[in-house]
Length: 159
Image (cartoon, rainbow, N blue to C red; front, side, top):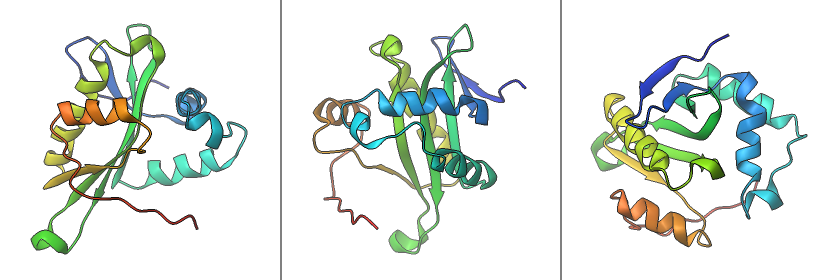
């Protein structure tokens, strides 16, 4: 089965809807990270369940970025969230942004995030939001360069 290509980036990389077959590579990208290496477990069947839930719900889009050889160079998830605050604004949540080591520094990450912003607008979102761990100072600089502002203090509770 071939990927459903959604866009081609200026670099020639293609943004495509993730397939179940991409899961091992996506999980490897999540693990290949100082924080992910301590919290991800590639053998956990929860990833398959999560993928199936995401794939079945049109409010969520999990994508991969493919290089010339159809290898996964990056991934991210965009979720569209309706809400009442801000006059009924629809938000887009950006999650799980990861770029393979070989593709870092090439502009692929910036191009895919910019594409996600355009996608969110097309879906009717008024606002794009994301969270990034406080320890990810390079990521903070990256997102600020793309126009994101650290306007809120985020909080989480493990359930």
